[in-house]
Length: 341
Image (cartoon, rainbow, N blue to C red; front, side, top):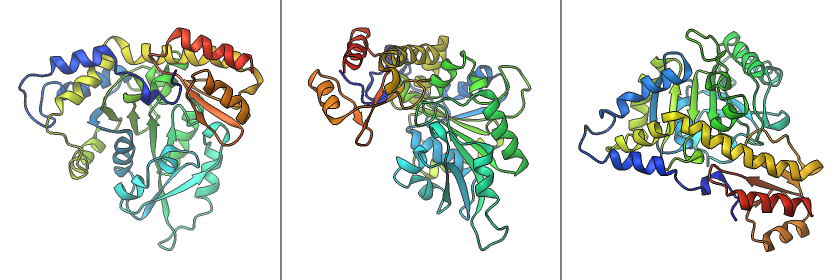
């Protein structure tokens, strides 16, 4: 009974079907009919013009998006628990040719304009110090907490005022959007699903793999000119796959009929059931599909002896992650086991 990560989940059957349907001759790289639909589909989803590129991993999505905003002599401000800092093996420095990460704190692994300002204001303007070029935030955060629209607006206004790019790591963007009522524009800080909405992020790494995809993630640019720059960098980074139609097929299948949102709602609901049983053990509000709870080593061993798999989170906590395909009987069994600790 795996609650290790949503990366452990199955590929959704509709994604397999879409890949099989794409198994026909078409133009190579990103010149195929399916890849050419991505801009249109994402523009419809967000209610404004945007450009979308496929890549194979979330790390590539994050770093290529940031490469459009950050020069090698610059820096990205992010939370100290951000995936780009903790879990990407130095990839930002590699893709950004030496650019630096500047780390901020914040409850629930979220950052605020005030936290960013403390970093920005401490940097002298001049060639002797690394200058900040962008802010990167994670939606939902690494602790499963969701930025509200007003929080995103505050960060976007700050970024605009300081001429900083704003990137969103949306590995679990679908879970955040589901929590906020299903409007992806709100979850990206775009002011709602209405044409001409202002503000919001400049680029979004739209996660698919954790939510039922297999090997495709999307980078969505709300400034389409950024995409033109990243097309070259995607090729140089080795991410322009020759049969790109299979990546596009996965993404389009997830968007069709809001499968991406249905999957996220299922994962969130499973997490909510477990959270309700955890009570005051919860370390953070459960707003997406991650649960962090205080446990002793003995309690974690007891759960593992019952067949549950999860990660330790330090010496006194555990992290459990639900997915689109979490089985109801296993979720209920885990909830009962936690309540009985």
